Image 1 (cartoon, rainbow, N blue to C red):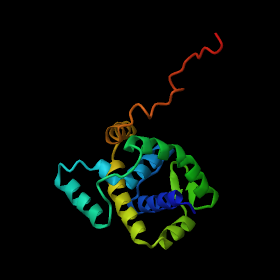
Image 2 (tube, one colour; image 1 turned 30 degrees about the vertical axis):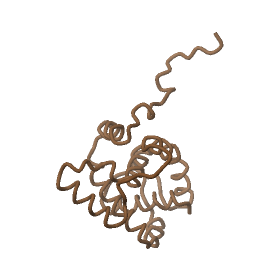
Image 3 (tube, one colour; image 1 turned 135 degrees about the horizontal axis):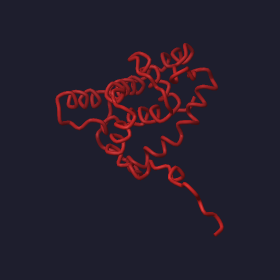
Length: 170
């Protein structure tokens, strides 16, 4: 199993424990991304943010980002790969497409339970923090918050969505 697929499976497991619905690939991608970068959703302005930041630091997450790409670029890249990761998990019977949402299967729960490392435990904590915070948001509010946190408002545009009558070969 790929590292990203394992992360996604852990997120699905936490979502099931919290009874959080995962109805669209966009929601799955957004939850998955911010679980990997949980400090982006913490403003630090209130006691809850400070408590969650401390909990994340205690399990090994760092506020600093050492990377060649900005958070926005990483958001778009990870969002683009989500379909392949979901297909991988569905094809192996670890995730199923339910009537209203993606759901983890019993086999998926079994695999997620076997992921017993310090990293997996830290990722579960980050997923819990992110899912509790973001699952309350409407789709629109989630898009707006994601753009604010990741700075991706212009990167998230579907360039072909606004094309009404493309002129080709004039």
